[in-house]
Length: 183
Image (cartoon, rainbow, N blue to C red; front, top):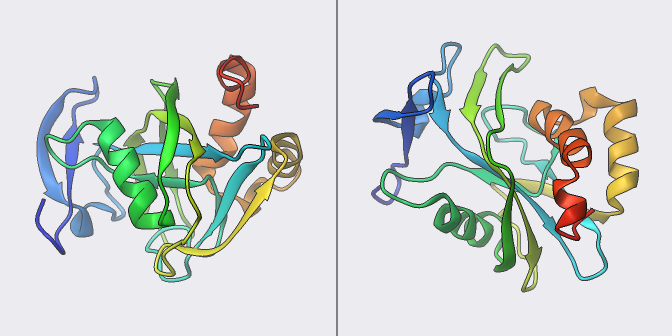
């Protein structure tokens, strides 16, 4: 990965790496399957961080979503990518990084026809520093009770990113986050 050009790892249907592509050219109406991750960040009071995507984002601009997401660069471990994106997107560091939904996979199409098609392991972590979100990534953010968020996602799924509407109930159904002390 070079500065200004981000590459994503392309995947076969079975999840094996089959190449790379420039991230700027991947998210289209025919997005190929690629590797990503999502992270749900918690504070010392057990609250979960939700963020509202910046209005300049190519997909789902302005919707509320999980704490942060991203794509590991070719050759980068997902855990290193999660830590990198916490710094880049939220201006913070994280502790207690745990994969809670290792096989999460989804495909969604936004109102403009842009497709997200990812194998996207889901992590939880705790915030270890002050938040200084990047305005190009995050329009707003809020720490909320996870159960209140789950109720809001179930009642108004259209107000949230499609991956959050799938991930949050799966975190509860799986008991992964509760077992790790996060929910």
